[in-house]
Amino acid sequence: MRPRVLIVDDDTSFRARCREWLGSTCEVMESAIPQGALQLLQKRPFDVVLLDVRFDNIPNGEEAGLEFLPELQKLPEVPQVFLLTGHDVAADTLRWGSQAARYGVEVLHKSHLTPQELQVRLRTVLERRRAFPEWQEFLQRFGILSCSGRMEEVARRIRAYSMVEEPVLILGETGTGKSLVARALHDASPRAKGPFQDWHVSAVPLDLLSRELFGAEAGAYTGAARRTDGAFHAANGGTLFLDEIGELTAEAQVVLLKAIEEKQIRRLGSTTAERVDVRIIAATNRAWEELRGRFREDFFYRITAFTIELPALRERPEDIALLARHLLQQHGCELVPAAEEVLLEYHWPGNVRELQHILKRVQVEATLEGTRTITSRLVRKVLQEHAQVPSSAVESLVDARLRTECQKIREALRKHGGNVTRAAKELGIRRETLSRKISELKERCRELGYEIDPVLCKGKNSGKSSTNGAQQ
Image (cartoon, rainbow, N blue to C red; front, side, top):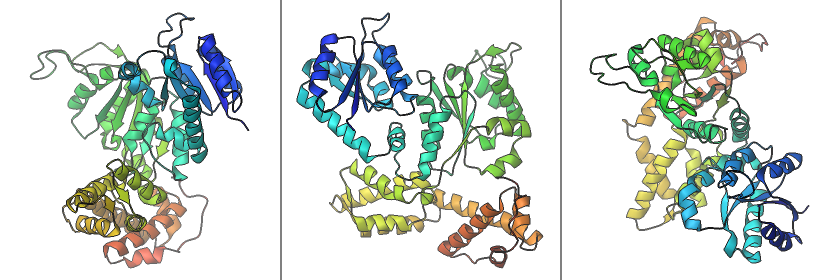
């Protein structure tokens, strides 16, 4: 099947030239306005869209091509877009380059374009699209690199949930890329032109939280000399990303729920409510069952209606070498296959963030040795040094989490005589989930040299499967 190319330009002669250049190898269609192009795109998928930035044949069409980009992201099959400029490419890139990069588009200079250049550029992107599934291309537009099937569902949900106005909750361990996914949800949404404001939730007093989220009137607290805006004001018309929402106190949940449902806020010290237009995205490294225990029921169901769960890096091992090669190539370093195997042996409790940290250290070691080749010896050396640091933040975090989770599971199993079904019901998770957690904990204990509690061994195969267990 020949590639399908859609030319969207108000210049009739340019459309004719492109049709002549591509007609023998591609199926070419044309439109003089973006709206006409959208109608064609909704009827059938196209591989490539050549899109002019400026349209003189429609009102306020100076940047109509740029304004059309979000519409293309809503299509079931998003085409590769080339933005056409008849002006200075360098100047245009400075002016709207970040917006173009956000949507993964490339730029062509119309006045200097030759048949050979156009054909080569199209051939390159078409080969790339054939090599990578569409969902991988979609994630790459937002800086998320993956070849793991576990991330296909993440891509599907980002695409679907970016179009809803309801809150979205992102679940995942520390370092899995929750902030990247939050940004992708914003950039793929109709709110992409609006602000993206992130705010780190912490267990602060309610007055301080209200002040930071909703702003304050002059005199509302000691030292308040003037009226101030809060995070909701800064995000008005866009997205507010609440990171680590699992730390929110019960009092704060009531206040935030009211703001979400009523779409209005009240500054600290004010009696007047203000309307705000803000879409909420939240993230937490706490597990689903933990949130159910920490959140008020009304807040829990409101904030968890749309969820995206990010897999840990150890659950998508095929991405470890991919990410490592990509990160090292940016600094002119080459990772040999034996070094990739060493990376795969490690558990990566700190996920992608820890991988980035390790690779920076590996790169420094390579520079000190005067080489650009990353060998298995170099990687093993850095990993061993990393594991031997007792004060490592990542190691301490994972060690504490491991002990806490072990303790909870051990207590539930002891209480129910090793019956996994009953223990799972008490913990609020499925029996299969508990069995998997027990296996993972035993394996991790072996890796860290901990003694495996006999209760965990007893619970491994105890109890019968039940369909009445609580859903995770």
